[in-house]
Image (cartoon, rainbow, N blue to C red; front, side):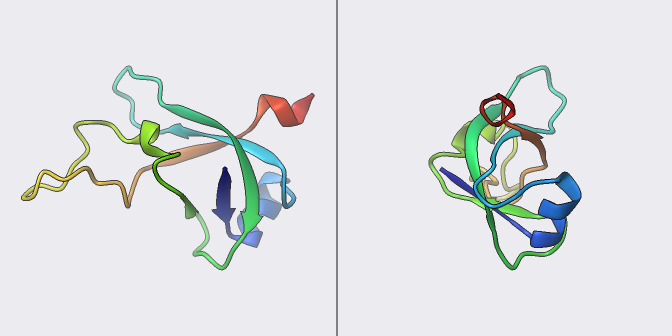
Length: 90
């Protein structure tokens, strides 16, 4: 599993290509949503944005987070926090 990240964000977080990170959903609704073991890959993205693949990142999507009219899960924009993976700290 991979996480694409802007090189400037990688530098700010002290990350190098291949480092393992976890994403945690920033929604504060009492439900822990986390995906661990994502390998960081530098990619031309706006600063502060990350990208990954689905279905691997589906666990981060709160069920109530959906488009207002279509009621489709709003998977293209989820606030997340990047954390160094416990596996890469070892």
